[in-house]
Amino acid sequence: MNPRDLDGDDLDRWRGFTQDELDVAIRVIERCARASSTSDEVRGEQGAAGEENTSTTAARAHDVDVDAWTHPAQKRLRQAVLPLLERMHGKMFHGMTRREYVAAKMPKRERNRKKMAEKAADRAKLDGTTLRNERLKRLNALQENNGEINARLIPDGVVASASGASLAASASGEADDGEEFNLLRACYVCKSRYRKLHHFYAALCPDCATLNWEKRFQTADMRGKYCVVTGARVKIGYRIALKLLRAGANVIATTRFPIDALKRFESEEDSNSWIGHLQLLAMDLRDLPGLERLCAHLLNTLPRLDVLVNNACQTVRRPPAYYKHLLQAEAQAGFTRPLAGANSRCDFLPGADMEPSPSALSDWRQGDKFKEAGWMAPSAAMSQLQLIASDADESNEHFPEGALDVNGQQVDLRKKNSWTMKLGEIETPELLEVLAVNAAAPFVLNGKLRPLMAKTVAMDKEAGIEHAAAFIINVSAMEGQFARAKTVHHVHTNMAKSALNMMTATSSKDLASEGIYTNSVDTGWINDENPLEKASRLAKEQGFQTPIDEEDAAARVLAPVFEGYAESPETWPPVFGKFLKDYRETLW
Image (cartoon, rainbow, N blue to C red; front, side, top):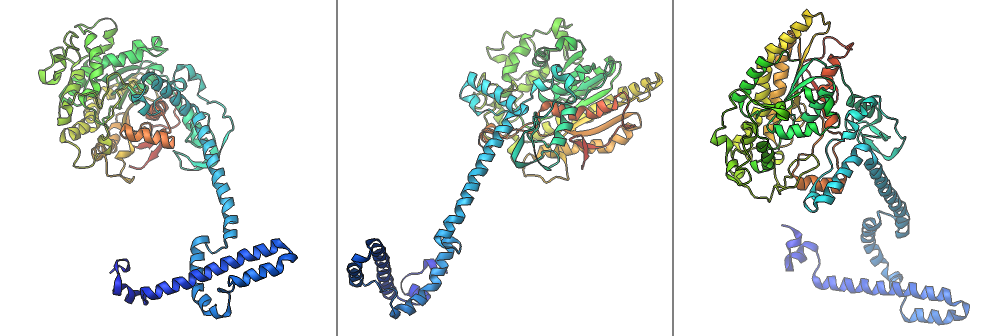
């Protein structure tokens, strides 16, 4: 039994004395304490009064019984209390006198104040780096224009001013300003401790920052080459397509929303120099029969295929309401057959010129907003399919109308999403979507387009090209790595990326025999996938930003390609059958 629960006789037996005895002991100790306190007070007065008042103060000391504690008769009491005093003393002042404790504590407080000041100074230096600073500026501008909702947004996205054509000549990097952090930091890439601050990256040590900055601008002569990039409308896929276009390649980019993608590409300052090499294909990779039609279309229309980047990925599932703001533009584009004008850059699969089925269109035509809009790509209409119960929710509570983030994407205010779900919380349709987009679609593309890629290598060899090669990049993630510890969340995403990696490990040697070099590549940490409420809290309270951006991710993905197509490749044959992270081989 817990002694705290005892009372009455039970308590007396446990502690060995009665309540009356305790009361007497307390009165004795209180009397001695008052006497001791009075004695100290009188001694203080006596010291201040001088010799002429000595007799008076001595008499007062006698009157108040100043020896009640120090009298020899109380020696046994003092001895009995001593262990208790030592115990209390040890608890209160860690074994020191109060004066010693205060003296020792003062430097610690000063150290803490200094450390807090150093942390604040380091935070300011962090936010002064180009990557973080540009993100913060863009976020602040967005918040000023849109108020309360966007106050919950986070500073992320690409820093285009350090990735586009305007800085293409900066491949050697810029000189660091020589600033150093007050406190050691751990490098995001190599985990080593460092102080020296890079002008662009806040979370990388000098060596890793130099490498990443140089790789950010890596390129190769891709003129005459044909590349397929899936999921190229936004973020990493968009930056991959841009880098290939700026390198001179012809890019066939798939997306569910070709009109929105076209607007984004055309908005680039240097688009006039490469837009003629871009072709957009409307495709929803959940539609595997449609994907096979796409492959047949490419086999019949492309003269060659040098690079296939399986970038499209579903990590966080978004319901139909998330995409609704895109439908108006997709429909108003007024596609006709044959496509003409600017829309000639957008194409659809053979057979897709038929009206999409009512199930694919869902109910998008029923709203007044879309009744007169015209025809849209089946891939865009399929975004409105209601596959799970929550898809029927069309309220603005979680997807407020007109609220876009720094990437021009719909703001998602849900408090729970796929990233935070556990086994048993994920609906079966979502599992199948993730497996289709992340693993099955790359499987179909790699297999069906293999003959065209092998033919391309053979043609180059016949033409006397010394280092003839084609490349497949399966864009993966650390979620698919068995060697890394896992949380209990997003098990379906982990499964899909592991399957993608297994395809690379299994098929790469066979493909290499035909000159097709295949690798899985981790993009690095460029997104906080947590629900916005949590991500926003981390950004505000801890100043969190991802350590790299989409341009760095695209550079990682294309590094094996650009290295393989360099004028004088450092290694031949190129690396294949590997899982690459931060430009180096990593464990499966």
